[in-house]
Length: 205
Ligand SMILES: [Zn+2]
Image 1 (cartoon, rainbow, N blue to C red):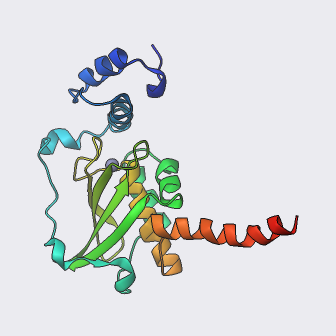
Image 2: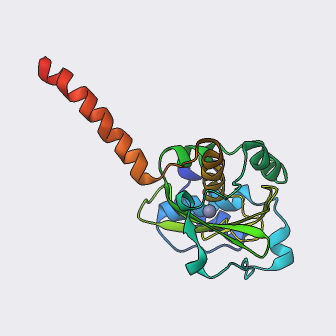
């Protein structure tokens, strides 16, 4: 059987998902994403401790402000992301970094509550951009990642480390470094500027 989820047939995907006790419904791309997520998180035993219903306690959504409007947010650093990922035997998360760089983040909002920072973000799914996952991350004043959850199949709290959570962490690290972060809008804008620069050359030819 193919070990690459993308090469598997639908019956093969369903059979593998069954081993994880996962949902088997949906389109093929959903089954592929779900299985990849379950395989990545297979070594994470915390879900057994908390049960599938575990949800992070998050503050009132109205308390959150866009990251750009709150310069006091300490954010996260590349070093803290590495420390966080090392708990799951991962050194880096290339998919999460690519998602951040390619503008999959729709927004990042933050609020300070009960001596910790809470980050809420919406991240587009990689294979079906109309699907969006809400990500919640609790970050300490020392910038350490305390808890995280994501709406995707792999993102059960409190230790979610799927590519969506990682993409949001990279946005926080970028914000600390540059005082801003990339969203789908800023990425589109960059492409537009490139077009403006190139068009006079085309006309001259
Ligand atoms: Zn996720």
